[in-house]
Length: 322
Ligand code: DP6
Image (cartoon, rainbow, N blue to C red; front, side):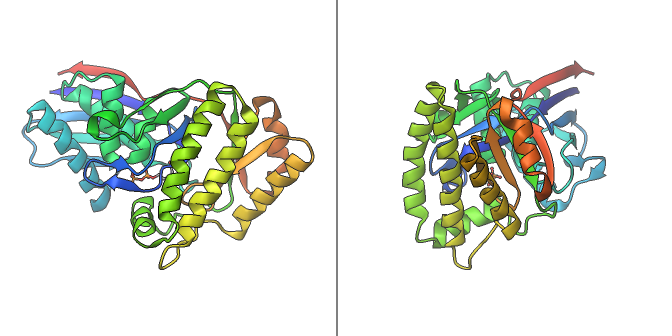
């Protein structure tokens, strides 16, 4: 019996992933780019139980619900088929993100599960292969294998759709939690509805592919201003496409827009800050590291604030043969 433990962090996309070309292989409609954070880690231990009848999955000390358990089993089935094993596993996962902050992400969860389960089932995979494996659990997890800035190439097939590191300007992220409640529609479901019903979906996919090229060039040039501008415009385009779905889905609330307004005011006052938001009401603001304190003071009345920076990709912590 082998046990392995891995640790992974969530990431925030500067060019967003929103839409799949292939649901089975989890190939995205376009590439994306993100920063892996240095906070809110998920630590996951996978222990093989050859005589058990099924997998077991506990999250933060409690038995996970049926939907979560099923997603973990489907992921482990992939790992088992590759390893030629039928052994079931006990998966224990602990997430350091405050519940409801929108950061208890499937990205850190499946990145940690990919690394821990590959080690437990004795698969010898390099970082690129682990990134591809994590992708099968959740698209955004593809990028959490990488330290700091990560570019996820859309790819043409399973082999070419993975994330790799990219040089870029130093930046901080100021997370503004305007609403700690759970999101009502999951990213997975909302992505499907956007692709099926939003008249702007094709334009979103085309413009994201172009923004990604421009973003990668701005990162390589160390051009923080351009990185910020593309980040904010890409997030607003994603939300425009989502809002145009039928029935509509609106993640941004008035409190979220107030943060976008405050960030615009900061820029008018000469502090470079740019806002982005994922599939929920909370807003993430990027700034140069030396401006992060001033930005967080300016946003203080808008919700819980935390400042985070670039963190490491998913790592194996311990491995033992019993
Ligand atoms: C808005 O990776 O959670 O955060 O692949 O269906 O598991 P699935 O979706 P998920 O979607 C993330 C959406 C996003 C944008 C991003 O992280 O790029």
